[in-house]
Length: 220
Image 1 (cartoon, rainbow, N blue to C red):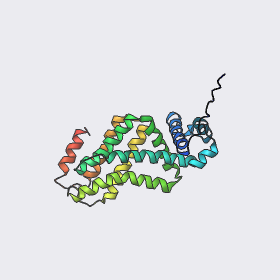
Image 2: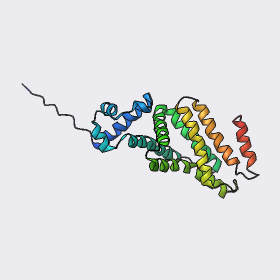
Image 3: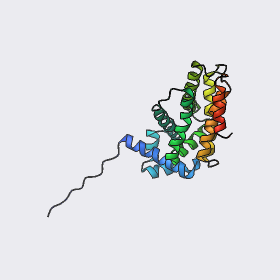
Image 4: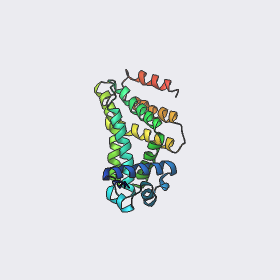
């Protein structure tokens, strides 16, 4: 009689367990909101222990930071593929590409936004939150600085301020979409509206008609 020996399944590597924990956290938040995420539920869903979550990632706030950081990183990576010479095209692409990516994987980004909203509202891990927010705003800041260098914007408003305000406007629209108050199409519309209005606040006379035409095309 032949005895067949079955190998025991190999335990998951740390990186695999970490990936699974983040994926399950994303799913729980996407399906049930922030209150749907507890370390006990997450451990059960990811088939690990609560101490393992602490060892590999940290507490609940660390997990939220991971979700938001992953979101920002994906958008940044996608934006490096954009080959636009005109500053306004670059600024528009930040909104257009971000909303396109969101449309392709809505629950992924909804969970990241819920995480971001909680971190901002509570001020937990504020240092990391500010760093991640700064990275996001810098995408628009770079476009504004380039526009100033090309003489499209006067430079009366610092590029940093323009980037921060454009991003703040985008965040409002993003949050409204996350909690299903507006459609993805409206999210894109409002994000572009912020780009045009803030650029218009510092635009040269020669550049103003271009921005006004953009606003008219949005049917503002």
